[in-house]
Image (cartoon, rainbow, N blue to C red; front, side, top):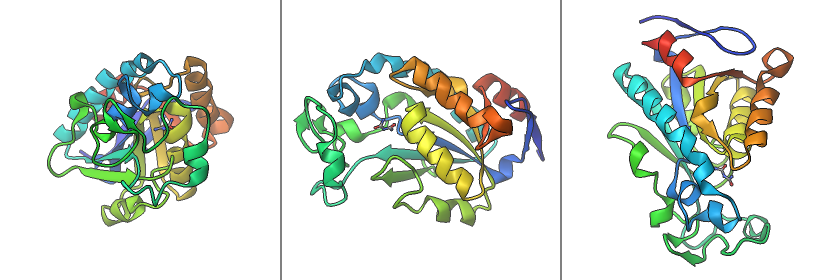
Length: 222
Ligand code: C5J
């Protein structure tokens, strides 16, 4: 297939699947399941569940089209040498990054809570990017992976809309990537932040991206 025209806000965007990557941000147990980082911060983690089924459908479509699929995981080295003290000290969580919780040490690589949820497990050949920050470009080789595959467009989904998804879209936009968000494939602990975060992206003529949904994206691609 050559180009697909995706219905989106603020207007349609033509994409070539051969030059497009599906980027799934931080669909980890630490954010979506009780006992992880998200819950230690006082959040209702069930609010993120709505993104799972749309992402499953997007993954199935991307795999069928042989599109590049990238999964990210936020987390730190076991010695926390890549966790800024200011990040560890932030807020008043019941457990801090590195503390032992029911799914192992909070937000630490290799622990059960750091894993991607079973429903969205990567398959062989898909890229998994471990990131210490909120943005997927910061201190990772994501840009190298994308340029090696001549990617110009990112379909960015995952959690949370206003934190790691937003930061990644802002980083990607500044690096010249066209970013499209499926609204139903993103979620936040704060529904109002989700809505506003999406509007911030598509406002002003798409100031740093496009907003669509999984159904419209798949209708254009498949
Ligand atoms: C947060 C993320 N919310 N993946 N991380 O701390 O959005």
